[in-house]
Amino acid sequence: MKKKKSKNNQTNSNLIDQKLGQTKNSAKLVLFVFGIGPIIGIILFLYSKGFFNSPIM
Image (cartoon, rainbow, N blue to C red):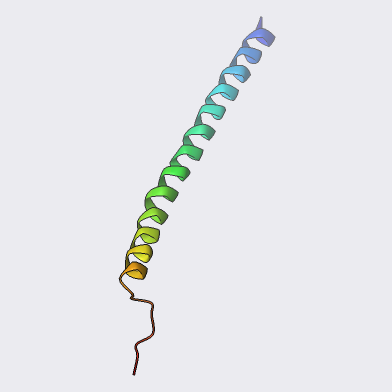
């Protein structure tokens, strides 16, 4: 009986580890999208307004 309980505990801990891994991956994805997304948006906005063009002298 002890062996069966340890197998069940290992299975449950593996499932919990997999769920935590998925949560960590989704958290990384959300941070990437909301961290990098606005930066790309700002760069595109400034480029469309001619911010990166050299001034004519």
